[in-house]
Amino acid sequence: MMFERSSAIIKDAKKLSFEYVPERLVHRDEQMRRLETLFRPMMADSLPCSAFLTGSVGTGKTVTAKRFCEDMLKYCASSGKMMEYIFINCRIRSTEHGVILHLMRHFDPGFPDRGFSADEMLRSLKKHIEGGARPLVIVLDEVDVLLKSGNRDLIYQLSRLTEEMRSSSISLIMISQEPVSDMLDKASMSSFKRANTITFDRYTKDELKDIVKARAEEALMPGTMNDDVVDLLADIGKGYGDARLVIEMLETAASIAEERADGRLGADDVRSANAMIYSNVSENKLATLDMRRKLALLAIARAIKSEPYVSITRAEKTYSVVCEEYGQAARKHTQFWTYVQDMEKMNLLDTIVKSETEGGRVTYISIPDIPPKELAKKLEYLLDSPTSNSEFEL
Image (cartoon, rainbow, N blue to C red; front, side, top):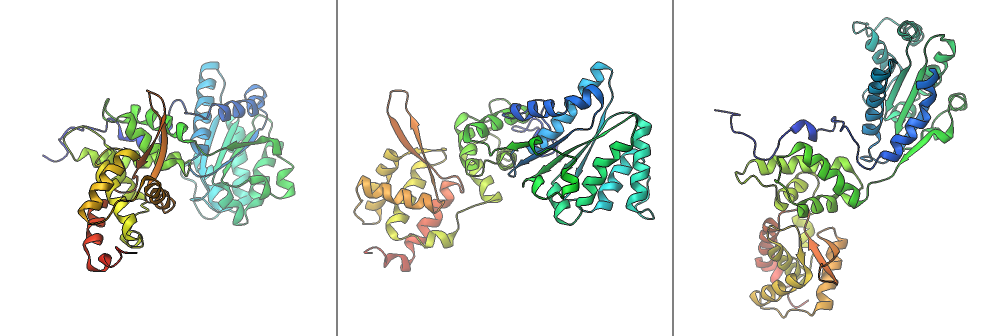
């Protein structure tokens, strides 16, 4: 029967969703502490507070804001206080009317989408908030989309509503890839403090490894993925510092691995996932390589097999065999290393230097964007074509 086969890899698919908010965030403790400091006046005296969260895509801004608001709700529940928060994605609600309507429907789900001006809705919103007699936190995600479309006055109006309230307050958390302070007008900026900006740097490779491990522990069956595969995922994501990318790749790789019966998520599953999401390898790019670099890349693809990495020493041994197969003299180590560096610049492979347990440092090569077997097939096809043979003497 359909859907009756038990999962061998994925334990809880919800934990791989972008909407999932972990109980504890990895490598965002500093930002959480800063938010706690900024919002202490709201929790102590119901005073309005604000924060600007800024950073590149996938640096944890949204999930940090959600985790912080959820933690505040838990704190209030345990200490007899009350508060609530409303989360709005301004890419979806990109107009003043859309944002205010979303706020109104938090309090009145049946509120009509037409027939009321922005001022009328704001007056009604104020009554609802005062009637609740509790602090309200409004989170505006991707607020730069809203501000760039000429809706700067809304921020000012929301910040000023609190001045007219007796028993409640409105606090704002604004999230943007760009500094919000550069987009607000002077009237809006007068309600906020530039010092309330919290920066989210791109994740490092080691931080991405910790994120992958934490998410895999929650989402995957125990023992389905080894540390080398975690390394490969982090290697792919390190150029972007983007946790969303590596989580999406983990989810896709797990789904690919699920189709087999061995209960393992391997390096080739990650490469296949990367090729589906974003691949730097194409036949056109491979065709631009001269014959000697094609031979070197073919050797690396054959040597790495289905492993995450291969040492440059092992790759060179395979290179000698490949050159003999195609009737060519193998170049020496220095020239082979030059080929590797050239192809790394083309994003066809990656290199990493690892310290060995017995001492010394060894260079390893990975092919993150395509399963090596598929890459080898493409290269063999190009090498065996008549037009390629004319390049041997170049």
